[in-house]
Length: 252
Ligand code: PEP
Image (cartoon, rainbow, N blue to C red; front, side):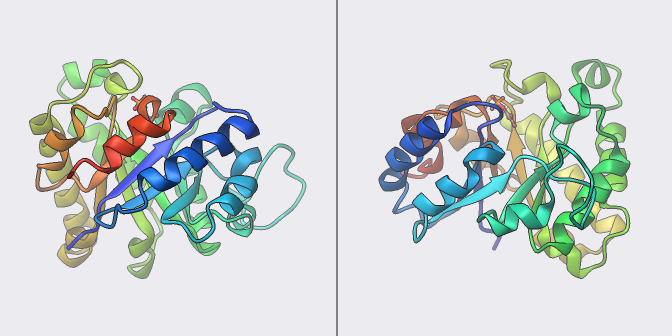
């Protein structure tokens, strides 16, 4: 059985005070959510304080990115994966489409960041997904399998236990336009097949694949009813404690 993950990506939103206020409101609302893992990804500067305020709760912390470098060193502006772990993160999001689009992140950078994160003891939420133009050209599967192959390059079989894939079609992120549950399921099943071919059927069976792209309280249940959708990566609707809690509690 794959335990679902519902993760909130706060992007570059919230001052420290707002972040603390939101998690304190969220904590009691999701306290009984044993059916899934709950994860929040605040900005770097809020991670330590938020992690401290969540100690003993069922909410885990993710970083939104990390450096390609494993060790500390002269890399101005970078944050190493071990530093995220040090301040309380369990996960890190790597290869989000905003980083690929606006910060020129390549598959080879995604691969190096992933290896650094795993070496540092974090689990990775690796984002893949096609643009609208790529979907319309009929090359969505090629794009996604290329991103997966590039990002997962060089990992050992035991590293795969620390990989979670988030399928986030770029045309559905922050647009209000969600992939239908059937469209998402089709790509998730494809991702699992690619994983089985590249690695093993056992690893593919264990792999958790999250869907991301305008997930809201009113569409989460339909998405989660699909066999290969193992959770969600939620942007906008994770910013408010009550809407994120409704998504987490999709079964009640
Ligand atoms: C995201 O940022 O990962 C995301 C899916 O955003 P939204 O839910 O706002 O589309």
